[in-house]
Length: 302
Image (cartoon, rainbow, N blue to C red; front, side):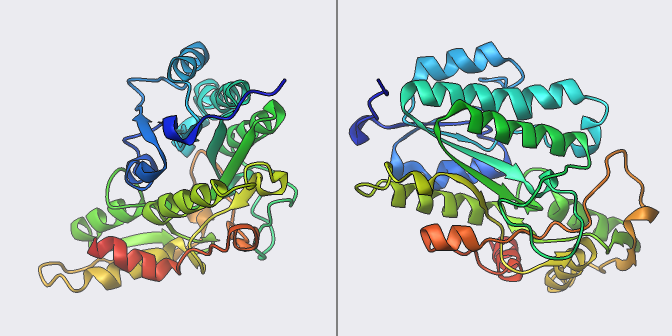
């Protein structure tokens, strides 16, 4: 016998990673959908599977939204066990508990599940082939969620940034003020994605799914790609940041030198092609995120 879905009048939304850049925005966008129980790593350590299970059972949410992850891509190469616990085991536990409760699980994944070959945008059903530990563990998390059989949405995204936290945008703005010249990788291509747009699109999807009959429509569940529109390289992203910062007359922006990724070796290999095809999201929910340049301008003006 399947669990009875929660009454909309008592809907609790369990939000992990509440102080992360995506989690912070989700606290703002999900408020209209239910009572948010926002947890950070101090209140629920995703590396502790039993703690995760017990926390979910004590809250009994109608919706679980999991933006939390082990995202230190290079550090994951030397901490594979912790990365696996947070990125693979914990999502599986959340999915098992969601299935037990009749709850919905929203989880965020990454372009790093692909090998980065070619130059066409990746579709949801393309063959995966992660190049690094982070990608391997994120893919394992997706697989664990699917295996648990709960109603779920997995949003794969890329190059996430925002006005707070730790990300490429904030690092570049700081370094451009500190150094006369910066060498930036120019042969990895993807879509910079503003965390606020991710959070707002997530809320729009969940709002649509509240409509009569939508929850029972099995075709709506599964994996979706969700990035801002358009594409650029890390060098192009940095140039766009610099161009918007040039309005600040107190700053002399650094010179940006394009380099191949091979000139900037890192412990973890990065995919060259991180383009994600967002058509499925538009077809299912009528949503397409704004162009990445427009999002960046809004973020810097926010």
